[in-house]
Length: 584
Image 1 (cartoon, rainbow, N blue to C red):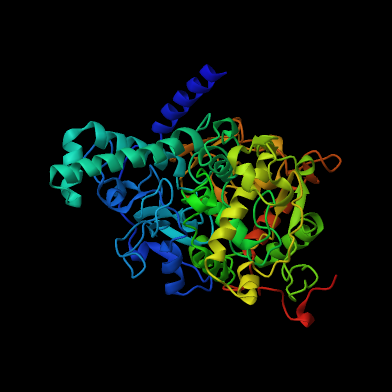
Image 2 (image 1 turned 30 degrees about the horizontal axis):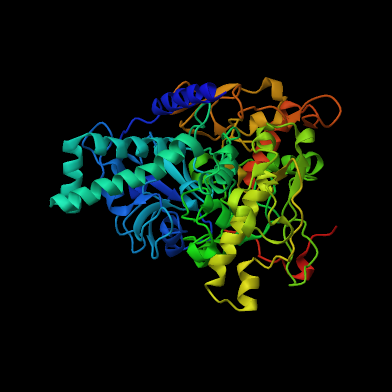
């Protein structure tokens, strides 16, 4: 078994290295980027692109000055090229060094085990939840959407190679030392030791947390497994709990996320600070899970609680993007009207329709948009996420500090152990803020305690407003365009390229294109494009609707292009006024 895992790791690294050549790309000019009305100001956008949520990947001075592994070019300059696919960022008060969108400067004020105090480069949610649609030389910016170009997995593999290259190549090391002002033998010795220490952290992530049988490709990560691996295996030092990321997903779009009852694909967490802190846990949040006791630093973290609260608040003011008719073509309103009737008939029982169905008010008077939760056995889409984690994980020394009934339990379901470790660390970080009861209610998004038990083996079916801007489709990005979402699953394209121009006809990626940055192969583990099928036969087992006539499919596509019907329309947080609620 161990030999098989070692062979798999080598094969995976070789496969990943084949898709991450360091290639710089000219940043888009201001007149090539089209901004849509999503109700955010310029300041909103610039803050979101660069705010720190506590992630500390590699020392900031190293990140700014290290070269690629095989050239003298600065590594940071290639992040916006096709190898890694980050969206170029502009210099702003929030981003004085002009880092790509989603790459941030983070300060670790007090040392946390494994992270000395200092400035670090990290990532925030905009790295994966911000992107462009390419069309005829233009880039349509989608705020809070998905990045279908970012290769996070490939970037980590590359940084591991970069740090190793600076240790192995004396000339490369000396150039780095000169750039950061390490000129004396003592300074150079300290720099070398720092690189060695930081490479341990990066190498662990590259060869354990994000190692996979085949590359996820751009725009997809197995965040579920990455978080669980860090929280239950890597940080507490329990390698037996390691899991491979077999279930890559595309990031969900973020408009209506704070207003919705559930946000994650698997409907795991309603409380926003729990959800956002946990997300940071998967992307280099410094957390001490290996010290002997809280007095020695156990559960200390660099979680940026108030920044995570601010981003959730700002996302509650984000409107879904409206189809830009002046760029992508006019919408046939009559066809869209026919499509809406079909959507209400065949789709709205799962996918809520504006002005939405809402929950009843909770004890804080807040309503939330109802989000469909569809059993995987019914919708029939890829089930790898349901099988990714271990049924049981070893709790080790952390068992002595778990809350309530879980204390001293030697084994717990891995998902539960992961949640408990995050819960304790998050509450330690929150207590430092000395918030009032009212502030705590707001921080927790006005959700009640205890929260509901997460449903098992379901996928979220959220409202479709703005979905036109988020290809490829299904939770794992396995369907190239909206048209193919409406045909029998067996007839869908099995392999298609990502990275090409947006197709405004079928709405998504052109499944016939033979060029692009990555070939999506839906026959591989975790990539299935089965399910959500419109075909003859009884509902369930992957069939969600009847076999549609082609004119019905095109009408549905036209309707999905047309929503939201009002540009800049923001869903009210907490629910609309009583008189504006839809009739049940």
